[in-house]
Image (tube, rainbow, N blue to C red; front, side, top):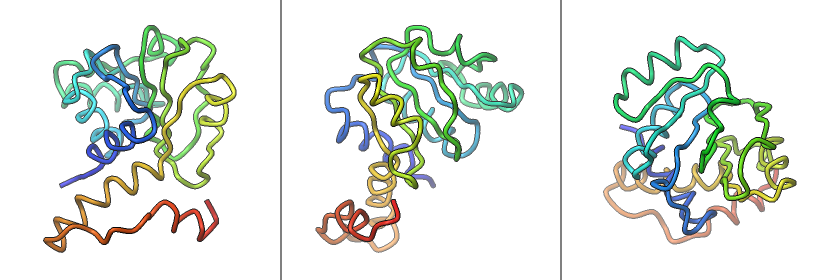
Length: 169
């Protein structure tokens, strides 16, 4: 079981309130397990299409085929960005996405949480785009995991504040 998809949707709700996945296609960068969870969650949230871009076009194609209708592999990131509402990086690196090609309402998410302000998120903020960070997703996916493991809700503490106070993010 994976709670990554739940974490992604909760992170968007927290850091990009009012964002509607149903309003435009989304792009997911990557084709691993986190990307799979993200694509499934975004499709379930109503996205008309999720475009998968990966350095291995074959892996993107295999993932798109496995996830079915609505998931589409793309070979060029520039093609993937046309008319999108969200860009989600599900790789451990910070890809060089040409953000100048997207509209002002696009939300950019990076699942990476160390550093918290990844190069991709910094570039998005410089462009005036809303962003969602990986720490929000990590914390949000941990809640249902905790409940599944312990049969009770997690303690009522501000995990983000504790993590930020610990430093090294």
